Image 1 (cartoon, rainbow, N blue to C red):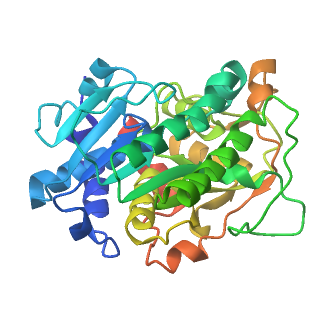
Image 2: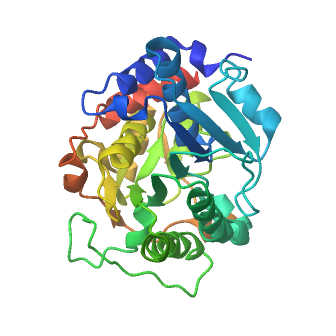
Length: 352
């Protein structure tokens, strides 16, 4: 099985992260990070970027990578698995988070969460607990280890449905969520996770920052991912027609995984204590039907319409317009490096 880190295009993505002029990498020199969701789409890219920096530029940043399966994590990080600066920790955020006795950690990043529709529908309890109980366990770890800062990976879904009064959601917007539904488990638990962060900030004096991520994608997508974009990519790679399970008028913000990683690092290293930041750029805003057509054009296939099954429909977002305003993050110096078209082309080329 080929390693993603053997792919030259992926290495260029990592180089772009490591050389991003707005990132103060020197602030991660000789420090330690504890990352939950380390083998996930964004977490794995973040770990790769840090380890590449360790190897090539002597960053000397220790990474504690939490994963529910040690062997899977070792396989994913096979290039770094025996590196002294990467320690894989087996555990579930819903349980007490294991950590070596007597060791401290500088930064704690909670990236673990169910993030796709079938998981919301088939494992709603796990979805909610990872965002609430898991967040509390990670916050407790940060307090116990006297971390300098805690970062919570939140979601554009906390904004709910657009009430028709905004074109873009800034960090103060509060949309509508019907909490008495199965699908509400994900956005409501992310909202609760943010509230827990504020509670630990107030009661325990913990420094916290929140990254509100949009619908993210890239070559580190997990094979189990059932988001619409993930299905489009799989269809295209298999030479199949792109299956659109709605009229496709939904208008969303998307983020390429390399940009999501630089956004998270910008917030971690430059964000203000207690603040939330949208990780989004308008160059990656697109309607779902146009997204499907773009992938079809790249892959030489067609777009077809098909009704979703009951399980898929139960996990679908009801939001028809969810575009995020990234102005606040840009004031910290962050810039998106990839347009939606470029990001899709790179993702498809690497996944092939």
